Structures are given as C-alpha cells and as structure tokens.
Image 1 (cartoon, rainbow, N blue to C red):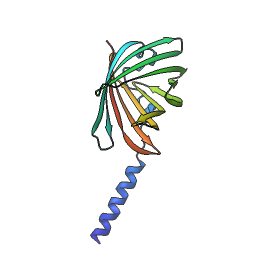
Image 2 (cartoon, one colour):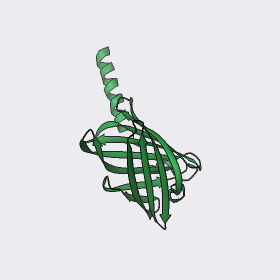
Image 3 (tube, one colour):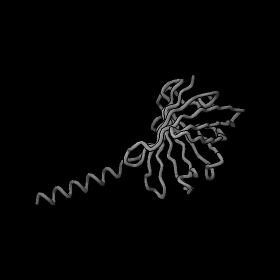
Image 4 (cartoon, one colour):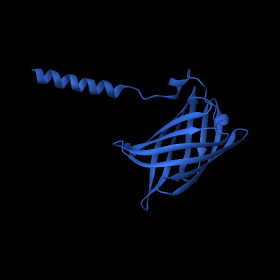
Length: 177
C-alpha cells in the first residue's frame, strides 16, 4: 500500500510540474530598467559567452565584438565572434521595430525571420539558426532571453533545441562601455 501511495504521489508531482507555465515577456513588464533595444544595441559593445551541452558541460567559449546602428525603426547589429579555439564567425542582423515592444530580425544564417517581444527589462527572441558542426549543417531552434541589468550590462540565456529535444544552452554577458 505504501508503494502505491508513493507512486501516486510521484506521478501527481510530475503532472503538476508539467503544468507549470513557461515564462512569457509579460511576466517582466514591471521590471526596471526598461529595455529599449534601439538604445542598448546602438554603438559598440562586447559580449563574453559560452555554450554548454545538455549535461551542463562547457563545450565552447567565445567573445563577441558588436556594433549597432539604427535609422528610424530599422537597425543593423554586426556581431564578430572569436572562439577560444581561434575560429572566427560573423553575423549581421537586420532588426525592425514593429512597435509595442515587438521586433523581427533577419540574418544570412537565420531561417526565415526571428521574432522578438520586449517587456520591462526582458526580451524574448526566437529563431532558427543554420548551424555548421563538423562539416554538417543543422537547423537549430533558439529560445533566447535577454535581461537588462543596468544601462551597461545585459545577460542572455538561450536554449537550443532540435525537434523539441534540448541540445544545450548559450550564456552571454553583454557590456556597453
């Protein structure tokens, strides 16, 4: 009887945990400072980051030099990556403000369009990236969350998945001089 009660309790706990809702941008609407993408991603900045596999082991470290420029509601964000193994990569985003905290973006290695929504100090950015790995290319989904800490620092955590399976995470710290 005790085993049956224990099993029932475990199943109920797992079911309740599965019902927990994932965060949405609106959860951060009251958080300060308010993230203004056009202001933050304007001018030079640096980011330090790492990729961890699904077990949490660091697989790759990198530094990104960024330059953002805006003309009205359209911005260009140039990202120059230097990895710890010496390899380099460049990505150039075109980001459009759609108003009311909504954004869309494109880049050469992004499949279709990225979509974003900012509320309070947070931005959720979702996209599919064409990612080369050991001579093969994979289309990987990113669920990217950015949190403005103050006028100079923003933290970013992105969850990578393919076919709904968690592959790993990218963690970044942006710094604006």
